Length: 614
Image (tube, rainbow, N blue to C red; front, side):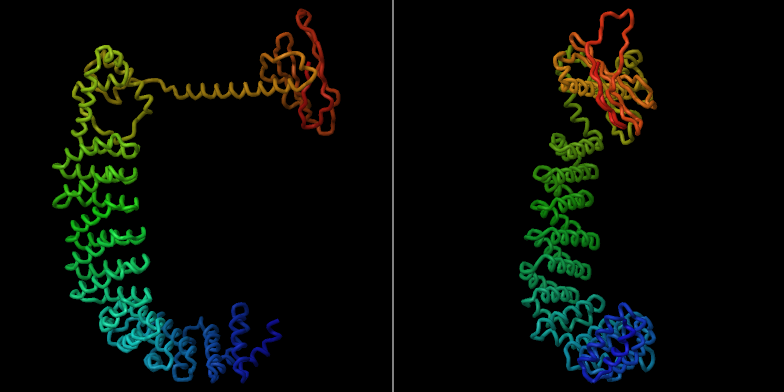
């Protein structure tokens, strides 16, 4: 189909009517996606269309020509060098050509060499004085993004962007700010001369422009201008969204790393906004920034830690509270005054949810372990968490008290006092229990230790072994040391318990089957007058399971009758049993029973199970 119209499309590309030529070029761009080989044969006509005086034709022709040659880097370089000699008059085509040159230069600085390289750079500099603002911006952006460009080479481009900062058009101001923001990352000195113009844009109605102005000023500002910038930003921060605030916080962190002597002002600024309204992402960005500054600037450690402790006093985010408590537990004990942080941490144990309380208990245990002077005081606080409603909090408090060594002896002594108040009979009655063993161990000044390895046997086995040791070995050999090696061997009753459970389950299922079988009898009208079923036995196989007819028998015991229910299964596909019944022969010596009634099965087809009663 394309071959039939190819000649007409090629003629339309070089048509004198600009609309026809532009339409044919657009059609070629769409056809290139599916029939690239055919469109590549139109390269001569497309090159001729690039020289058209019509601006739109030049734009579409250059776009299609680049698509045809994009996989040939040398051909693209030659095309760009040839078109920079002044044959392009369309602003859109010029913007497109500048972007192609920028991509070529970014891929490799040696793409243009000799005369071609000089002509390309001259073309970019000449484009800075183009009549179209779009071409000027594209040329300035391309010059700013050149690899290995020096500050003196950026002068013309930065000067043009500085003029755009005072433009009445918001689009030009925003475009200039975006370009200068990229330059400020790698070449902040080249953007310093634009600081006066950017300070006036802090109050711009477009918040994107104002945010970019602040971030650039924070990157390019001097140490002496930090205080003035913070005052200007303070009134601005409350008027922008959280996403812009996060950008500002990141810029402030970079500025503090650049000027560490200003850490008090900058960290204080961040701490003030921790107490202001804001979402989770904004607060997390501030916390991360403060933590990063603590690592980069050691002088900020104590002041930053204090600011974070004040923040968790009114923090609504559990994740941030636990993060800060973890940090306080790691850093707080090594500060000059670690006791000042205990109040903030313990308040979380009293006022917060279970997750934060658990983190606070862990932080308190770190203070007690690393600061001996605080050990006794913190142990008192940890004992209060032993009565917490949450299991995790209680477990952490218990482990912490165990790790503190002698501090665990205080609650044990309290328990000892309680045990000593029991009457003698009560103590004797506990002699065969673990409680009695615990009392005896405490009376022998037993010092508990924390077991950090898994038990060699289940807990129920340990419990029974302790009871046997106390009643037997402990009495016969009082000097025997209590350990896992000296514990007597006891039988594991798990398998017996499991088997008993299986038996109970089996008996329950069998009972259910018998109840179902009895309920079927009540649905037979002929058997309704016999009364209630007292007991039903499990089905008994009367034949092998591989035979043609499988017969099962179930006995139903009543007050004066016994019903024999025969379940017959027909396994032959081409046979149908009719009026099927089972004949019963009584033994000669059995005169107590006689057949009272017989209920045959009308029909039994293959695969069905029918029952008959006798």
